Image 1: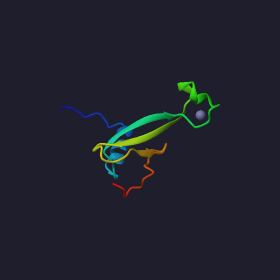
Image 2: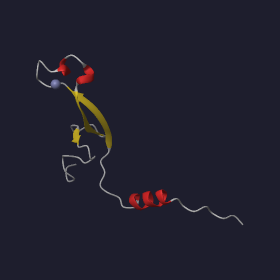
Image 3: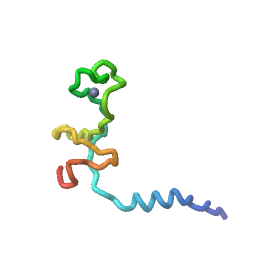
Image 4: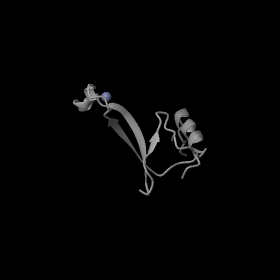
Length: 82
Ligand SMILES: [Zn+2]
């Protein structure tokens, strides 16, 4: 008779979190760095000195403009915008 090994607590915690679905958006998140408008700023010459990173959601259907995403992973556009 085969005895099942105990389920690790980390797996049980993840299963509990994933069993509570939340609203999701389809698309991919991309990371961008930006140049500012100041001529004297190092970002104008050095690509590694650019500002950011900024994250944006590129909607899967391609019909909507990219949506800024905060560091916490929540969309700034609000949950009701689709
Ligand atoms: Zn700059």
